[in-house]
Image 1: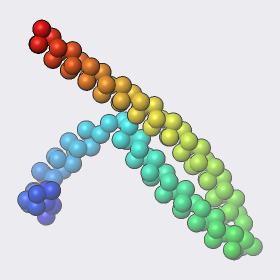
Image 2 (image 1 turned 90 degrees about the horizontal axis):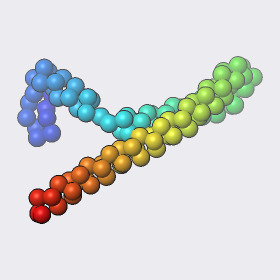
Image 3 (image 1 turned 180 degrees about the vertical axis):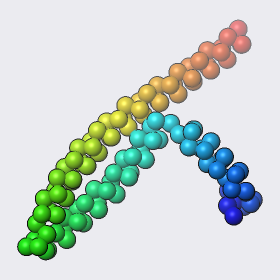
Image 4 (image 1 turned 90 degrees about the vertical axis):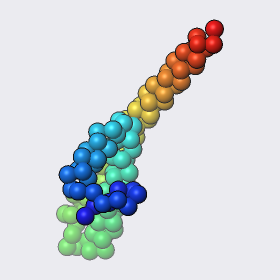
Length: 112
């Protein structure tokens, strides 16, 4: 039986509803950051596979070729995901700054 952060028991229906609301509230920058972190795990796994293949080169040379190719493709993807994250983060910061400016302007208008 799932529980919330306060330890209260939830039904599966309540749990799935809260989970869906949380997933829908993810910003593009958060999504890009999650993809970045996941890709690092894949790159580490590929490097481990490459090192194992190097020790068994005579029988696993063909797997080594595949893993080296996968490493470069995944590395290129990581660069693109990083650029995507930076762009989303800048846009998110601009939107947050715009909200702050609008809030300050509204507060100044109330004072006058």
